[in-house]
Length: 216
Ligand code: MLT
Image 1 (cartoon, rainbow, N blue to C red):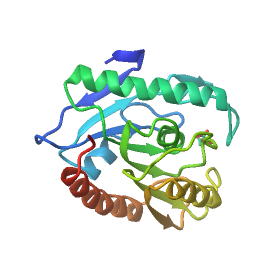
Image 2 (image 1 turned 90 degrees about the vertical axis):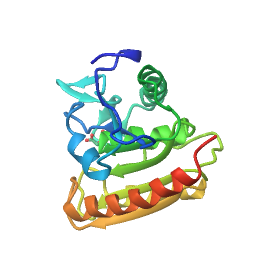
Image 3 (image 1 turned 60 degrees about the vertical axis):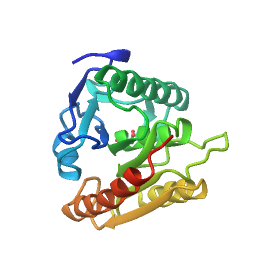
Image 4 (image 1 turned 180 degrees about the vertical axis):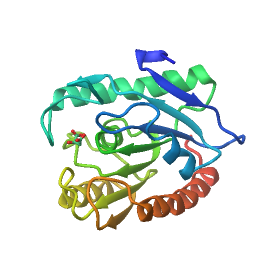
């Protein structure tokens, strides 16, 4: 489906009234189907909004341009973060669901643009599961993330998103008020079963908190 904002995307409605919407953001070379299984594992009743990144790097879909691995084109990243945030608003309006308080679930490049959304458009997300993330940018404006919960899953031996990046990102988000849970696994650039289990447990706590205290 191509919709609002021109992003190719896949949408599955919620299977229970009031269930949250997960915004699924694939990694480099992935597409809108990559994280459907992870999304269903995280919350079997959630609505799933899963776009495909518009940037092509040697035929691989991504969310923003980079100069080299781990060296981001910040101007492009900022513009595309706003474009994605606007898409989420338009796509949720099109589906007739609440577009505020989405829960982003991103892997690698998808985790990086999810983190950029938290730092540039915090009003769009209520929570985020960042799997193998890096620090996307240094935010210039003061932002308040005190209504936001973040799970970071990181590999101690990740050669693409080095462990210190997850630590710096966790501190950056927590310093702005986010409730951050950092889960480590011993592997590399991937999502191991322990990370998925920890994210499922974390999300069930966060869902209860969101239901008790929806965003205005
Ligand atoms: C990125 O470009 O976002 C990171 O280097 C991770 C990747 O996608 O390889």
